[in-house]
Image 1 (cartoon, helix red, strand yellow):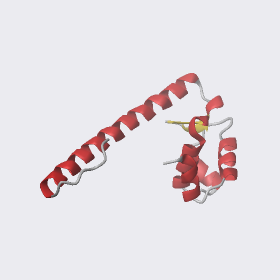
Image 2 (cartoon, rainbow, N blue to C red):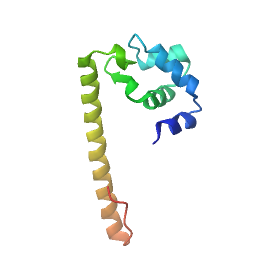
Image 3 (cartoon, helix red, strand yellow):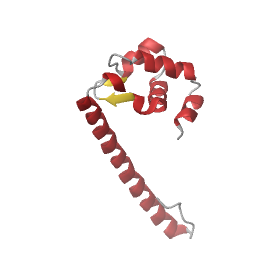
Image 4 (tube, rainbow, N blue to C red):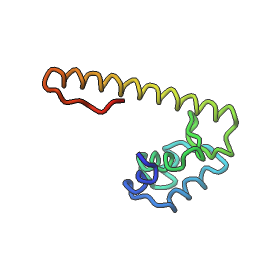
Length: 114
């Protein structure tokens, strides 16, 4: 989904995004700390982090601005993200295979290819 669209769906604004990025300029904050500081829900924090893109590093210590993170922290966050993406793709493929099998048994409809 488009990150800006996620902001709209969560009733968030560019000002919310700017505040989020500013809070992380020189420190790491956990999702819990961010919800307490901003009054936003965890879902809204996820939407803000997604909308911020690579300006925000999301790692085991929480969230921080790219310029504040070390190269090792950035690499670790990138590796974690890649591993999660691979898991999600494997799940998507397995799910579509099962759906195709069900469709073959009931009808000649097809799903969109991967």
